[in-house]
Image (cartoon, rainbow, N blue to C red):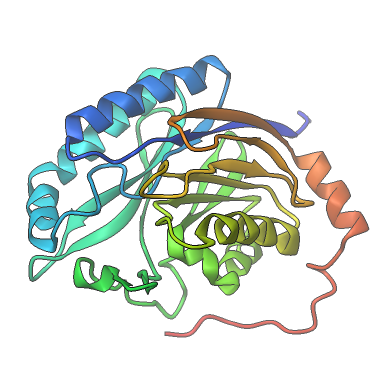
Length: 275
């Protein structure tokens, strides 16, 4: 009987979503190629990497109508060309000049693995994401949550503001995710960089799992894309500029952490999703 794969190499791409979809696709292609040459099996790009999230709801809706399908097709081709899975932030059209804030995930063969529609819209810090995007309804079976399978490992998808809601990360782990993938355009502001890093490490520590997180770079967002290990240590990352960081994840390391820190098995409270 063949041994199960114990290690996987992952990458985070730190990239701004500019007002040129073609330029953004070109940079995704370049960074995916760099990740593939470093033997990564999956790369995660930021939320909203398809197009500048600062524009008006009307403009964003127009861009989604014109580009959503083509963006997906191109990301699919890029994934297939470089033989690695890609997760990237996109938009899809919705009613009344709004859009859906999505993460799309394509496998190394170019097949669609998942389309995750953001659950928690960023209506905080004087920002109102719900003015531009439709809220995603909850389903009785929590099927709105998405987990993708890549190279024998399972990655739970999280989009930016979702990170502040620990029950979502825990439910993804409970449903079989090995690791958590976070795509973000974490808007800069007082202490926001500190909160981003603390929350990523909290999700890693409380779930004793690796967290692979990509963010748009400074100055509009905080940057600080990183890979965090199950004990909360950053093992790879990028500061404020664009770029790619690569790390190897060890399932054995994660198992060892869960042996010495068995908080998942020691829980006394559990919850079930409800609509």
